[in-house]
Length: 602
Ligand code: SIN
Image (tube, rainbow, N blue to C red; front, side, top):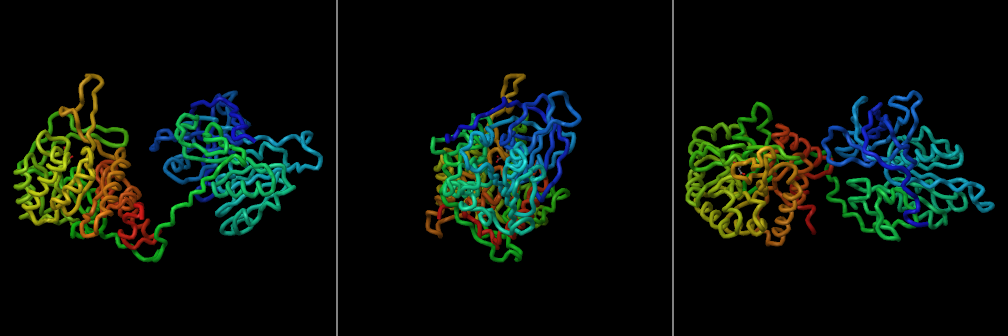
């Protein structure tokens, strides 16, 4: 058999489907029914890229067709079609699909991929050869298997289906034999498919096996079919962007070389697929005290925070602005808006624009000046409860030093030295782009204050890790990274740059993976130092959820800052606290240190 012997059958289209209904058939499994106009009828095994309209996710999700039916009462037109999908709710994209309301519209690209080959007619079989085929489905993988079954003659196949809990997707199958397993014993045999099926049961009993399910299950089907000498067809799944064969994101390794899961598959001859033998990474810390309340506290530069969440400078004012909207007292820390010795009016012209998944700002460090902050804002900020951090900026070495001296005499708990603001012509980021100037300003500020000193780094430096070590050696107690990425926006009507300074600072989820990479790189180099020489890393850059925060902590951050996300959800910080607490409880992590740096090589 060749890896691509099954062919793509119908021309895919980019279409809109009207939701007829979407109902739960099991916890987290939904049956979605759509009406499509002018649609090519999909074949069993094919799939569509499905996405809600509008949607919070960027890509469609590949979902196998469960059933395609011509409606009894046409709803759209002569060529209308009803499609049914079984969808497992496992992430943001599938959650949107599972929440689709009747009458809403979904985007579809499809039908895509190849199809299960039909069994050879009896006339083509050798005398005495088995006639029946076995269909094997694991979890949501039962959907294409059941769709295929509904096109076969009743009783010409057996079905083996394994579930975690409760069966679904089997309403339209009419097998000669139906064998079910469930992890919890809620249907069929308590256990897994290998408890009810093996090579001996396949040998001589089946003409072929068609299977769909999680990869370990398919690798097992491949093995027992090889042992039994029974051909098998496996329907695979892989993360993909286009579904059309262009992105090469879903490559499957086969004995004939790389094949695209979307357009060469998803159904492959079983003996052609080479399953990844790489062992899964070891499970991180196992639950040890799942019932115990986790301790979310963390210590940065000798300062204890009740939890690792700090409001990032410039996104939370001085804290009291958000007090009516958020339980501010629950937050670990608050970084003030960037402060300079003297008051600044900030930049003229447009200051803010939304981008896909973020914003670009050109505020220009508007602030009332450090003396005013100390006299008029600080007391209220301290009253709120979280650790109070003053973000210190300057236009010259001298202004940084004088600002630090003023703050040293105040009650702030920590100074965040800002050498990364991209929006000012003098000072700001220019101090943070090379090791010498970063070291010089840190050294000078260090000498001017005995407060814990955290230096906020720019991702626009050619080597942010090198800058971090330069400021560490110059006396920084911690580093926070990253500030905004230099970005440009152009007004297409005027043909002119939107911002007066042309360049401005990009933040938000769009920058998160790059910020995470920078934190990871720095943590890696920090881990190579003797423990006494290491300084803590506070991660920031597009963090919007507890899950994002955990990624930064697992990359080595001791705490995280949340900035732009607050503009999208004023309660982002407190939502993150709740989410982290539940996550730690579920995983049995007792402290932040239990998971800090887990993703670094050990
Ligand atoms: C600004 O005020 O322009 C932003 C501050 C910063 O990026 O540090």
